[in-house]
Length: 372
Image (cartoon, rainbow, N blue to C red; front, side):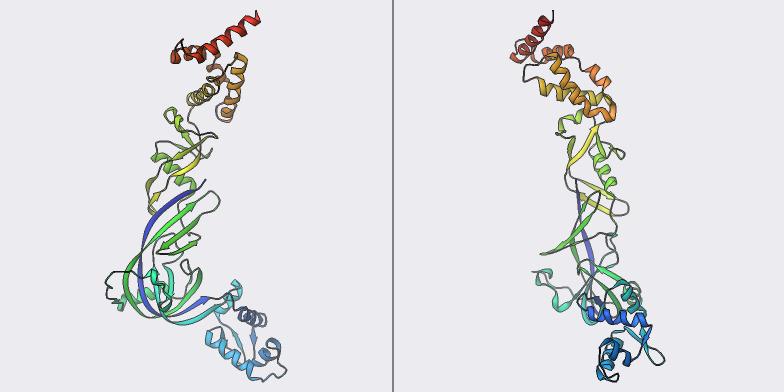
């Protein structure tokens, strides 16, 4: 059983000039070099030539160029007569992930919704923004330049922190924000699928749809209990079941399952979500009297359409009552659903002229006559 919840998320959008590093899984050569330096603590260009690039000449220009490239990336720092890993490069070795630096004009989407790990949820090269993300048929609004204390605050919030970007499906580190302009906000559709084992989120705008692991969302048991409460039924956390009273028995399906309607819930920590209809929710009777009524309904359904002896009737009662045993036992249920009482109630409901009533009574009379 899954629960689907959704809402709209309003994101702030900025056009920026950034120095930023993105995770790059393809550059395994760089990761191998960083691990090489990490093992030795410090290396010289001669070490790089002979032990990493496998050049016979320790003074080959390849080594010097490679070291200069790594310094340019910010992966190496100067020692006395050699080079060592920068702090960021050491973290990359630990995470076994290379973050390559870029510089350019990027569009950044920001949200403070707790479902995300960080404020920044997307960093997209302005030249690579799909046309279907840009609003069609609307007069573009003029960007507003961000400066002063507001720019300082943005830098403090965005820079020097490992970011997981769900809309990019990759990690990034913003080294510096050089310039920033505020653009009109954008709205995304967010759907979260909750389950007892694992939950996933899907964020969508236009034709772009991304699935990611949510950071902070309502707990499954809490949500199902709130949905049940909205539907007028308590939820048993111990039994993992919705508790159904007599009036709700008509909605129960085979296998102790019930469907709960759509609703809307305001969560104190997560905001307001729309709850889609939830199907196949496990349920149980809320009391022994409801359990008796539940079994009686099942028995009536089984025996009212066929010839049934008292022995066959009791077998059906035992079969249906055993389904309630873990909650309420079977003794009182068996006592309460008596064959003779069943025939009396049947007469009251159907009348003596009903063919089904006569079939059952005839079977009862024959079985009594045969035993004398």
